[in-house]
Image (cartoon, rainbow, N blue to C red; front, side):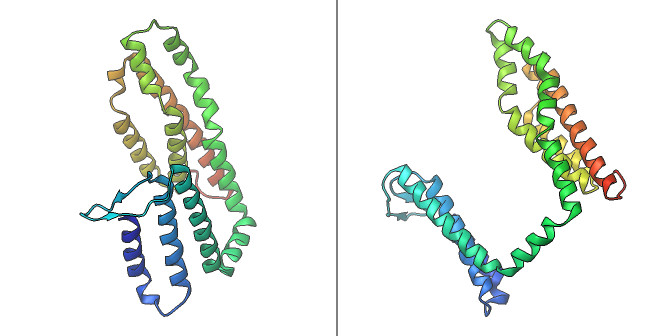
Length: 224
């Protein structure tokens, strides 16, 4: 269904340019990317398309289907490069020599990657307290809440930096609100989870805010 939907919508997008070659190459690349995702994630054996019919083609074990997915992904990449042609090279050269891109990329990496150790340092006392607790509901609730916080922190700092660097602090506030709603009330997981959530979030926001302000100031834009 994903491949079929991709093909149909892709044709709808390129229909006004159907007489040209590059749009068809782009559509082929997108469909191949979808097919590679199917082979990468599907399990061996017949798979349902969502209707009353099935796709009766099997390719052996899961590693075999993943290898096919990698091959199809490589083919899609080659077709994409072929379709993009000189436009990609020109755009890449322009980005490579752009001071603004270098400044914002450096600030982004510092905020996202460098903010991680800062968040870990800020939340270290809470994690030590949790690890010293006796095994029980309070400890398990806190550990469950902290599970996956590293990936969430990376995404949080990336989104916050992107919105602040784009001059949209309101959108950054919405992203933080969405994180709070998705994580659920931290108080339900105990006081340690609340402290961990607050310290981690504030540290991530400070790192993203500082680097976005520095990047905007470096190119002569208002800091917010």
